[in-house]
Amino acid sequence: MSRIGKKPVAIPSGVTVEVKGSTVKVQGSKGEMNFTFLPCVTVKVEGSEVIVERDDNQDNASAVHGLTRQLISNMIQGVSQGFEKRLEIIGVGYKAQAKGKTLALSLGFSHPVNYPVPAGIEITQEEKNQNILIIRGVDKQLVGQTAAVIRSMRPPEPYKGKGVRYVGEAVRRKAGKAAAAKGSA
Image (tube, rainbow, N blue to C red; front, side):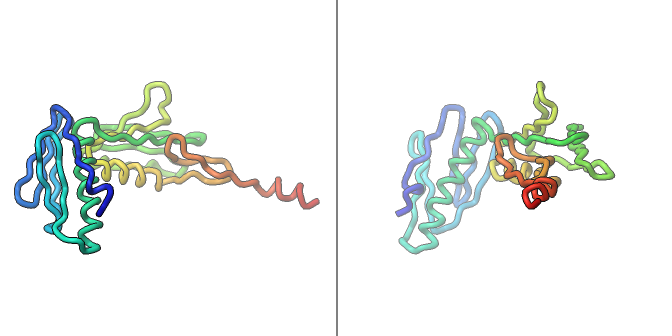
């Protein structure tokens, strides 16, 4: 049995969950999400809990059991609280500016990089520190993917640490050529 799949998912107040056929629809204050699950599992709403059960004991059903339960849990958390990722832009002249549905990034290239913000994602800048981007949305996968795409435009480099990184991410630093030359002399 899947240990994650066996746990029921609590439905907080203000969130409604409907199961029709093989589709789960979750509505909350932040938005609405749909998910189509595989036929080897069964999803039921009992009281204020969502219960995911599998039909047989095959390996595929065991994997899908826990996955389905966690995806439904993420949907419920997304429509009630939302998800957030924070990115920090470090470097002289490196900056970002959110303009409507476009994020303009200056990352040391000869041209600005314009990133179209996907539907369902909101990108803002922190009030105190304009070099911190806050990416919010109801879909955990889309929030994480958006943050990863922005970070991949200029990942942090190991010598000076310049680039785009997650807030709190530790970047391993390397000694430059000058430090290596002093040690060998």
